[in-house]
Image (cartoon, rainbow, N blue to C red):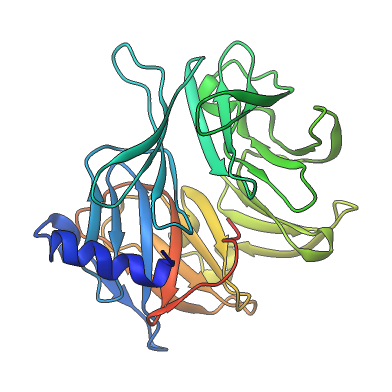
Length: 305
């Protein structure tokens, strides 16, 4: 099922859900309307009208809407539960479940070959690759000196060519690991990285905790940046979290800032002009997100996030 049809399917199953999310608003002077998955203290899909199309009854740390229409979600730890990963249909049926083996599952991704990439934090932070039967296919140990397990791994993503791009907030570094666990590229930083995207040509976009987004090349030179000073000091980038690059080259950012009236999601072009934002009056914390469609047109290809 393509992403463009899953929202219709969700509305058919659930109808227009009455919830606090219904008070949220999409704003754009250019007429932009996105449908997107929101992951955090609440987990839901917003359609292009700003209404809830689907909701999952638990908080989550990471998530995707897959090409088959299912949701892949990372669950936080709980009582007698170290956290894990589930793939669920939009009518609530679980088709895959992974239970963490350490203290925290930081992120997950379904790889192009159908296997699952699971980032685990704890005594030995690592990336685990498992199949749909939970059989381990491989693993990559992450080099980290961070004692806080919440900051050993931000997000881990497989990138083109088969390597893994990993943000390590506690170590203030972004590293690219090959499947043998060797570091083939790294970007030391002055502050904690949260999310990173590998672009064509080897450039990398990185969201940083200290209110900025950097684009760096293979030689670690900064080629573009987005900072608070680009918005006359407005706190748009406070508590910056995940980012997604859209097919048209625009950047969407997420902030966990709960200050009243400030957007939680914002879209910028390369010239740093704000084209769209999303404001949730209930101020639910959105940790990450996935834009699914724009003005009713599904985004093609693999999401860059």
